[in-house]
Length: 182
Ligand SMILES: Nc1nc2c(c(=O)[nH]1)N(C=O)[C@@H](CNc1ccc(C(=O)N[C@@H](CCC(=O)O)C(=O)O)cc1)CN2
Ligand SMILES: Nc1ncnc2c1ncn2[C@@H]1O[C@H](COP(=O)(O)OP(=O)(O)OP(=O)(O)O)[C@@H](O)[C@H]1O
Image (cartoon, rainbow, N blue to C red; front, side, top):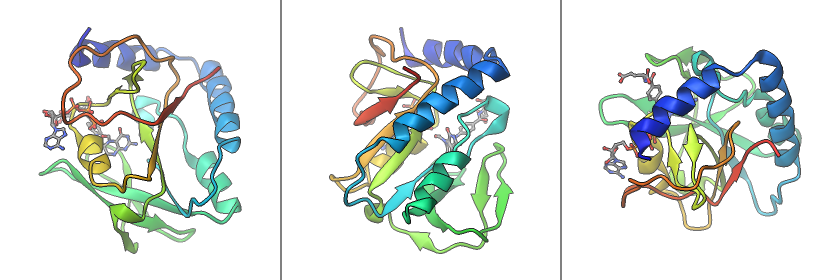
């Protein structure tokens, strides 16, 4: 199957999850994150959840990394070019919803991609080679292609990877790992 079909199916599957399933899946995902090896990690990039699409709530992950003194970085979308720029998220950073409903920082210090050590990536579905399907604008493919080679990309999903996305292309950057409920 191709990206477009997977996108439709997994948007629907996510939408169909019950609140109880979501709670249970999230707890399992958080536990796996708390067990990650994070030697040498200073700056952790996270997405701020789009609640209308029932994305995994990243706030507990943010709280965890803060508690162990990592700095949190989040993005702002440029909707003309489908690119992201990145900013430190502090306790007092003001957030505003963009056109898509993604919370974004308004008064924050910018961070270069090359400063990021660990990047959590939103996705609808991934495959056994860790290629991903997102909402189809290529934001993360552009972003990850500018990160340093030592940076680690970890996808977060409620669903187990499928065998293969048939139409992955040269722009698609495979993730190093995908965390899903086990
Ligand atoms: N939390 C979060 N932030 C993120 C992403 C993400 O997947 N999750 N993105 C990951 O790349 C980028 C935003 N990408 C998005 C792309 C499309 C839509 C969206 O609402 N699409 C509509 C169609 C709108 C249109 O085509 O104009 C839809 O799918 O119904 C939302 C976010 C950057 N920030
Ligand atoms: N590095 C890049 N430079 C130019 N175009 C790109 C780049 N990466 C992706 N694109 C283009 O962006 C479009 C969307 O890509 P794709 O379908 O892989 O999105 P996605 O990974 O599902 O979405 P997202 O990353 O926003 O979650 C495609 O037309 C692709 O060719």
